[in-house]
Image (cartoon, rainbow over all chains, first blue to last red; front, side, top):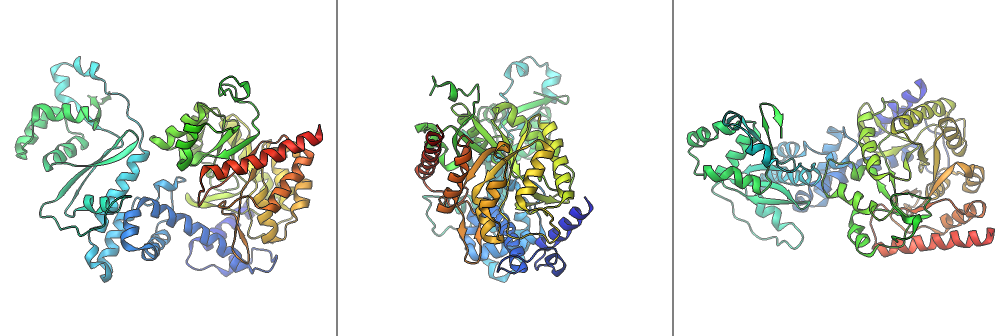
Amino acid sequence: MHQLHAIQCQFWSSLKSRKAHSECIQLFSEDGETNREKRLDIYRTTMRTAHVHGLTNTYSCCEKILGKQYFRQMATEFYYEHPATHQDLNLYGATFPEFLRNWTRNHAELADYQYLPDLAILELAYERSYYAKEDPPFDFQMLAALDEDDCRSICFELAASLSTLKSTYPVHEIWMAHQEHGEVKEISAIDEPQYLCIARENFKPVIHKIDQAYWQVMAYIENGNSFGNLETFVQQENLNIPLQTIIPELISRKWICGYQVAGRTR
Amino acid sequence: MGNDPSRDPAKPSTPRIGVGLRSPHVNEILATRPRLDFFELLTDNHICDGGYARQQAFLIRQDYPVTLHSVGMSLGGTDPIDFSYLRKIKTLATELEPVYISDHLCWTSFKSHHAHDLLPLPYTEEAVYHVSQRIRHIQDFLETSLIVENVSSYLGFACSTLNEWEFLTAVARESGCKILLDLNNIYVSQYNNAVDAQEYIRNIPLDLVAEIHLAGFEHKGSYLLDAHNHEVSEPVWELYQEILRNNASIPTLIEWDNDLPPFSTLLQEAGKARRFQQSATNTVC
């Protein structure tokens, strides 16, 4: 397989670089009218286009705001820096929000678009929610049978399709404005951070605005902390939250989907 | 449909005309139950962890036989075989009982990076051996034979010692896989690389061909792009009729990946393929 591996090594280097390598072109036969560099360029273009298309699918609001051409230029830079490491193109671009954060900092023309990285995080969470695994039904019977010690040591688990986001920008309103039937209008800056929960309902991701207190409790749960220490946490953080009903509410909304007791998942 | 044993999902029989399933068409298909013999599922769209993309596969399977068409096995690749990817396919296949599992005669990854494109192979004896070995390993793991599709080519390798149909046939014979003959890809390769399409289909052993793909290309001026975003062209229909003269029973799929039209357009294409099949069958009879 030596020759085949060597060919693929050269071919790949040429595909991924910004310019085709002349050594690679020598691998190809000369057939027809189109020269070899142009033939290689067909593959380079197709591969690049597939990746940019994947990013456009996930970050469609960012594309609408930046415009197709600018977004394509930025996505192309991302493509050269971050090759896909997974067969699933839907999973490509997990680090794009971070890339966007650096990009907006370093490009003066985006001075008024500092909200974009948070918007991209929201779009990524929405996409991931769509493809996330289903959670099994909540095991109420086992929960009811737990003794007091086990109850205190319960670590609840958030649904696989759920994620939360905190932003100092009105990213929910910005996202809504760029959906089908949305209306792009002037959106005011916000004085307080916005807290969002993205969860899947009937196969469709839904974005909910939540209170800071809920966001903090959900972060507490997501970090694997026990139910027994929740009251202490709420008091320490001075959270105005109905302690008696918060967990049942999150379970009924299917935002909590299961729990672990002493390391055993339910 | 429920009383037609050939459509009994519990017993996938040999289907005749199918269409590639695309997400925007699913609701209409479920509502109208069009007269088709099978759907081709793009495996990579349905091996996600969960959600509606995965659910669609099962909803369709309730009423139709399906085939699973993958793009990520990298049959011609020199990276180790990705068994985590194959495990996902095997799990899905166990649940859906597809008629076939297919992928492409190409490579798609290198050093754990993925091209998301179908990259060309040189047609050499070394490549025949290497690709055949990989296909055998994958077939063993999946516990089924694969059908392997010819890809469009935009260049040839100077080191190739075989032509494409010789390469494809040799791989099929050595590995025990079957061939998924994409006639649009043959036509595109003819235009781009001076491949003789007629000679190609004359020299493919039709007993190795398990399925035919029909699709449309995009004319880019100096070359044709295998974009699968147009109706099947007349030259491709002519190649199809040529095949049917020798074997009118090969299952045929209408493939449309990009710039999706209404589902009725795909049904029209499927209807045309069916008429050609029926005409060829009547002629043989």
